[in-house]
Length: 283
Image (tube, rainbow, N blue to C red; front, side):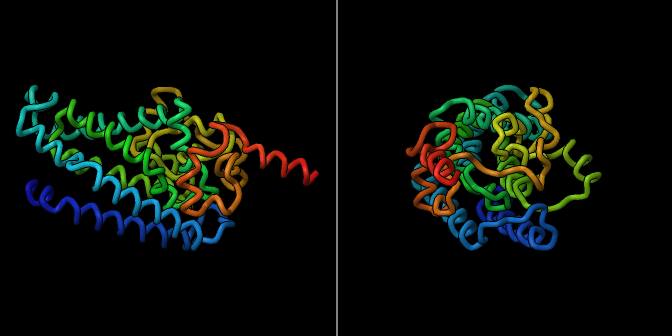
């Protein structure tokens, strides 16, 4: 069974990706959490265009990705779990949890280091918050993220099936917790004890700095609570909060060409001077 899963890794990941994307998109139409002003055709075509570029670059840059590296590490005895004997299920569970923690730390790092933040802020510059926001990452950030992930796999030596589970969960939960869906308050309160929910992660996309620097988790919600980066609700409420980033608030900035050049334009943080001038002229 494991061999079958690993042999069909690409098909499995693609099927789950499309299934979650379609399910969340339908849910967003049926029960939206917030009203989105920017036409979906603009945001979706450009956000999904980033996904296409990211996928092509990863395939061209890396001859082997995380699952393949886990298999290679197993064959050569590389990494912790290929040196220390542990029951299979323990190795799988611990590996998934540890890899998720690595992604949490990576996320914190991309906020803390100005050069990395320039890359990551393209994700935050989305002025809306829906399922495609969870797929919108600058290609250079994706390549750096892959390097970090491969280094973690090499050091940990996880079972290949654990890496596959982790990759599928990370991709699925990123789309889920970025979705513009309405969950009953009681359901959200219970669910966020086990997984990052849209209401929990939406706080992270606030223009308020204190809220932006919180709720870094993508899959497991525990790291934020344990390490003091958890904020339960946005200061202005989910309907009243402003999504996005102070710079790049023109609709034109949501186009693919502008998104790709955002890391190289404007200051590392704070409002674009042109936006400040526009505001002064309007007064």
